[in-house]
Length: 165
Image 1 (cartoon, rainbow, N blue to C red):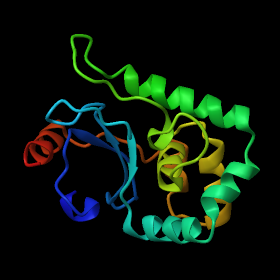
Image 2: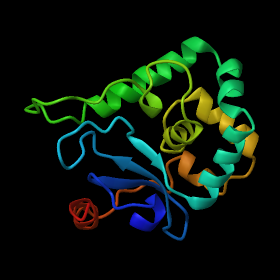
Image 3: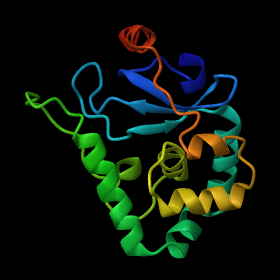
Image 4: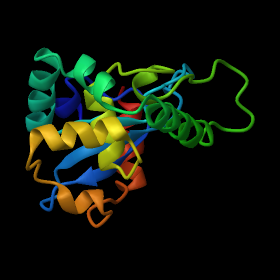
């Protein structure tokens, strides 16, 4: 995973979406980093080709275009769902800072198309993720959207990867 991220993982994670051959597409991060700091980004796009394609879309003005194209209420609801899902995973006895905001660590609007696509691919109801998918065309992981390719990484490998951070 360090090669896909460009750095060692800093928290426990599961593979939320994978290609048919097992290569990770999206990881689901724990809500807290190994050192206890908040991790606002629950879903992380790790597929190299998709990251490149989404970066190109962002570079072509995609963040502003997506924000203008989607219904603001639907986007706000996606941020709320994302935050609720992530926050439910914070241990009840955690007393330090908690993650805040929604998709990509923002409370409203669009900050990162990668985060919205990752959330949508992991099964989240995200209008920006839908918008990105429509612009990219064939992304090669359509079965994962329906949940067929979504599975957790073995706990040992996620724990080992996280402890190496």
